[in-house]
Amino acid sequence: MNYPVIVDVTLREGIADPEGATIERALPALGFTGVTHVRAGKSFRLDIDASDESAALEKATALAERLLSNPVIENAAARIEMSS
Image 1 (tube, rainbow, N blue to C red):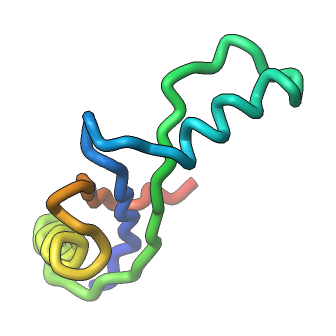
Image 2 (cartoon, one colour):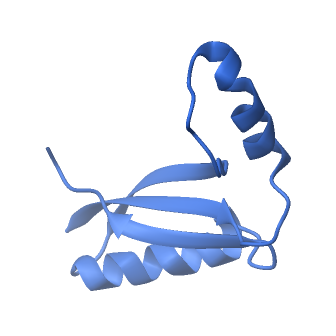
């Protein structure tokens, strides 16, 4: 069966996030106040052929750790995309 999966990659806590900081500084000039702790990241959408959801998530997690992220400085989380 084919499962739509989303993998979110974010910097680990304590790792400087200059992109997030730049976005946070720009927000007031654009009229967005009260927004803090902005962190930037990456999101990947994949279709994974697997026997069940658990196997799809296991495959996506392995893929994220080996290719889509740098496990030294980033966290990767895989989830099944819920259809709307």
